[in-house]
Image (tube, helix red, strand yellow):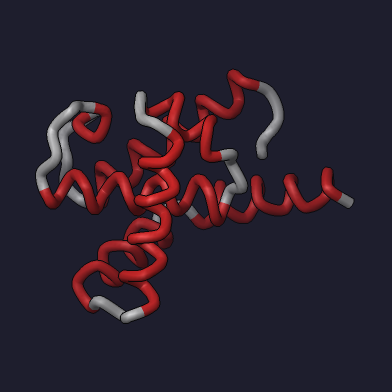
Amino acid sequence: MPGGETQSIEIMDVVRKKVEDVLFLNNNESLLKKRTPQLTEARFIMWYILRVKLKFKFKQIADYFGKDHATIIHGVDVCRDLLYVKDVIFTKKFVSCINELPTIIQYYSTSVQNRAA
């Protein structure tokens, strides 16, 4: 996980805003209580990026989004499943989001690996 609570929140903000931009959501819309399919997919993508690519803990992601950690686990699993079965529409959305975040993903995932060594 990236160091420091402030830095962690900033990273989560960047990921959330980039995914919202790529998927044409209004600013902060993913933090609302709405459960439209578009918002749900966006959250799953955000959570997957934060957990799998950037190594945030489930609890950190849950606290940031105002959700229970089990909800985050479920979302990451659903995202993984959709990518595994190669859901074409979902995968295109996911890849578009990942392509907008290469620098932050590379920098912070490398940073986490270096601290673990």
